[in-house]
Image 1: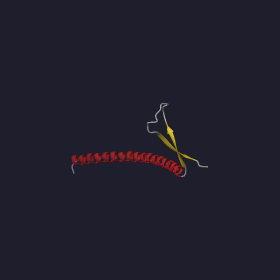
Image 2: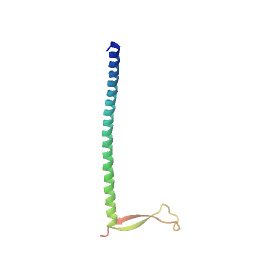
Image 3: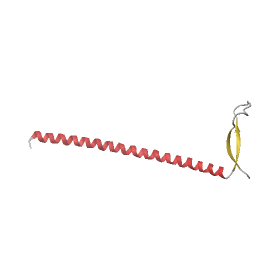
Image 4: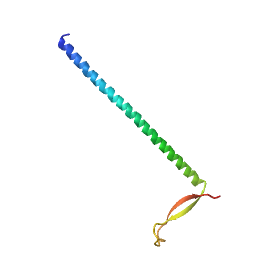
Length: 94
């Protein structure tokens, strides 16, 4: 091998090494992003679990209680011709 061929080969290997170092750096960044994403998703899952537990609690309250309609009117005018807006709440029957 002549000197030029050796220099060309060294240059090529240096370029390959630089490319591998960039890939390694990107991989490390990706790993940290994945860990952060996983942590954030874990938080979201816990929030949904909490919301589900609240919803299940309300569902049980409605199933096990009598329901009362409470009219919701926003004005003092006579609105007897209009359909009534109501909310239903559980009432303790004790």
